[in-house]
Structure formats: structure tokens, C-alpha cells
Image (cartoon, rainbow, N blue to C red; front, top):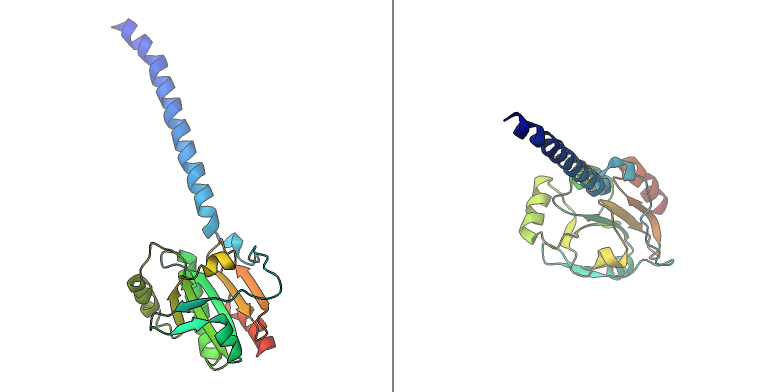
Length: 188
């Protein structure tokens, strides 16, 4: 009996080390996965390089309206693009800032477009999300790979395109109303 206990001790110690190692791996993997959603990303520019003109795109809004960057520019509107997805906690915070932008600027001068970039989400999920925030701007699924064209990797990410089609503002992470207003006031 005493002999069995002595042989079990090294086995138990080894298993404890293995379990400790697995816990460490899970914690590190979880930390790495969460990095994309940390507030420290706020204020970082979107990493894409696409020249001086923002790439054109065409999407259909939840209301069935076709929206293209070129069409909005031809109408003389500045465009604010919001790259987001329903299950993104910081994207929910961004909705409050975008609601303030919508209240401050007319749809005649500024188009706001929230693009859901998660292919696993549905139009129904996006509509519920929009309705939860009583949002009064355009929402669409990213069916034209706008995320890829703009090389967006963090969420939310926002871009403001001026009436000449040039990016005037690009940021990965939450952009506050004051940050957005500073740019929009210079363009409108």
C-alpha cells in the first residue's frame, strides 16, 4: 500500500503540471483572441493602403435600397462607413456615437452606412440590432466585400469619405461623436 502511494506521487505531480500547462495555453489563446476587441485599439488608423481614392462598392440596404459609394458622391454627400457586426461589444457602443452623428447632420449632406461584415449573421439579426438602437441610417450586409476592399481587420472600424472620394478619416476602434464631428465639420 505504502509502495503504491509512493509511485502515485510522481504521476500526480506530472498530471498537475500537464493541467497547469493546458490552463496556461487556454489563457494565452483567449488573450490573443480578445486583442481585436480591446479599447487600446481606439485611435489606430485602419491599416489598409488603397491610394488616394476610396474603392467603390455597391450594397443593398435592409430596406432594399441600392447604395454605392459613387452614387453617394455623385449626390454630393460625405459618406461615413461603419464596419461592424452584431455580436461585437464595442460595435454596440459605437451605435450611440453614430446616433449622435445622425442627429447632428442631415441625410442630405451625410450618408451613414453600417456594414455587417460577419458572414454568419443574417439580415434578420442585423435588423434586430438596428431596431434595438432605433438607428435611422442605412444598414446592409457586406455582400460586395467592402471589408476586403478597405482592408479592415478590427471592429468597429470607421471611415469618412469626402465628396471627392478621398478618405478623410479612418480609425479602427470606437470613434467618439466629438472625434467624428471634428472631421465632419471640416467637410460639411
